[in-house]
Length: 216
Image (cartoon, rainbow, N blue to C red; front, side):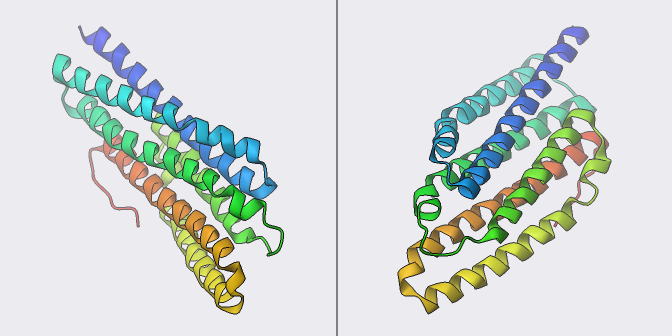
C-alpha cells in the first residue's frame, strides 16, 4: 500500500512539473511573440489555454483522490496540499500568458510608437523566477528560491516605472493611448505572474519544511 502511494504521489509531482514547464513555456513564448512581432507564436500560446485547464482539472482530481484513498499525514499531506495550491497559480500564469498573446496586434503590429524594452526585461525576469521555482519543487532545493523576494521587488519596480512611462506618453500623445494601454495590461499581467511565482515558492517552502513564510 505504501509503495503504491509513493508511486502515485511521485506521478502527481511529475504532472505538476510538466504543467509548470507548460506554463513557463507559454509565458516565455508570449514575451518572445511581443519582442519579435510573431503572430504565429502568439496564436500557439493562445491555443494552449485548454491544455493548461486540462492539467488543472487532472491534478486537482488526482490530488483529492490520493487524500481520500490513503489519508496521508506529515510531509506527504503537505506535498499534496501544496500541489493543489501551486496548481491554481500555474493555471493563472498560463492564462495570463494567453492574455499577453492576445494583445500582440495592438503592440507588435503598430510601428508608429517606440517599443518598451522594460516590458521585455520584466518578462524575462518573471520567466527566470518561474523556472527556478519549478526546479525547487522538483529537487526540493530551497536555495533556488532564497532571493525570490528580491527578484519580485525588481519586477514591481519595473511595473511602476512602466506605468509612469505609459501615462506620460498617453498624455503627451492621445493617439498613442490605445497602444500604451495594451502595454500597461501586459505589464500588469507580468506583475501578477511574479506574485504567483512568489506564492508558489511559499508553498514549496511549506512542503519541504512544514513552516510557513511570506515572500514579499
